[in-house]
Image 1: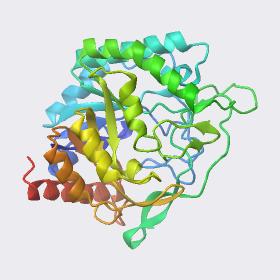
Image 2: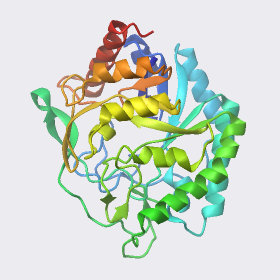
Image 3: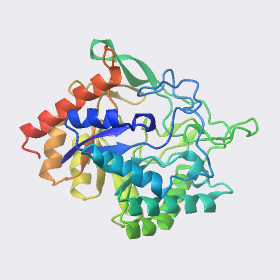
Length: 356
């Protein structure tokens, strides 16, 4: 197993690469979506403030990430002594009509195929994604973690409908008419995912790229009136069963799975790590389950993280673990301090189990 760090677009700097290296990380998962662009609640740190009602505007629908941009990023990461393991999340501007089954769907499938081909040419092996209409929504931010540290949680059901012109919790059409997005069924959303995978996985296999699916966050059956896919651990198996391609993989989030109401986290870790289909792992801890939970410091939640590591080791997982996100700490560099704490814990835990 390898220790990694996730960095948002505005954090993809040499200074932060050096920070990651100094904290013991060897790999990077990069976000190229600018979630904070135009967002009323945005900060320039780790998470939005307030409630996740819209992180901002999606990017330029006519400008995909170029091969040159991807190669440059990989080289900058490597120049700092790190390895670029994955890109996390497509920009909604590039694929929202795949999620919505809208009029530009064919063009958006071509967008995703082009991005995957470019990633393969650039030598980036994993693309993390979340097949969700509403995206990340309904979470709140407060002093939820130990010592009053700022963290993320959920305080109850959240059902504000998705407005027209929004997908994946970002505005994709600022000129959309008033009104809300009509709801669809779970079966329809699964149909859309199956069709998407059938069109994209052959391209991913040829490019040498794995598509790694994130579970729903928060893992509710519905959010904002829209259905969710992987909101219980067993639904990950349904996703894997849609297509046997080795490029059909999982972005395995310990925190999101721990938030699920059916329980069975350790069984899920064992089952899916045995499958050989884990892309990379979000290694974070929580207290409680939806719709009432709090994200905690990595050593202070309901999950026995050493037990999780032991299962991953026993089943031969060789991929990357990242903290995903973590509570911030009271100092001049809140995000960096919280991330350094998580990385230090993870590195020590890995060493204690003989993981290198």
